Image (cartoon, rainbow, N blue to C red; front, side, top):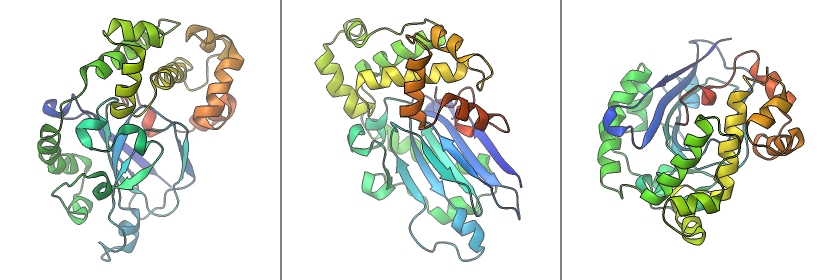
Length: 278
């Protein structure tokens, strides 16, 4: 059994909104085994699931439309990979939900809804995308459509984007303790209450919740797929101790650090490639 993950960076004109285009497919004639644990990463995705179509051969277009909006996540989702996998996704950067949909970010948190319910109308049929032979072809097909859609929507909230950058930059620089919500609100020229309101609409999280998620994602990266001692990881990423990190694993990953590390050893997961959420 062989499941292949591919990822492409967006064209330059889409880079301020989109982190990556990605595709997960099983090898022709094979079935994808097991399951994948998808961890919260601060992003929203447009996801097309053509697995049933691939299994049905010529019986395409049957059933519900493939395109869905996957909202920001506060906890892991374990996705069974039985049957014939054929997933095509567009991963959007944190803080740009308002450029994609009129639905406030917090209202789609931990939800997956049809694109039509999110007010996203892309003039491309599911069948057209399904029949494209490669990730590159699918990206070429949807990129101009997404560009027109995104340019017709509000361009973004500069305060929210600046706050996100403050936490993500600090994590990338290896600063142990990330700046507090109070400090970041002051840095971006607003109040905590105002930042809370804007953040919920545009990023789909409370500021403190997003800050914790950035710290947790930094810990995953520093851990080297669980090869580095967890006490060391906790200290480097600004946790009070290893137990503090373990509580975040329980909340965000719905598993223990050790169990998550064991899952990474054979193959790792598509979502956690180096630039997946940047």
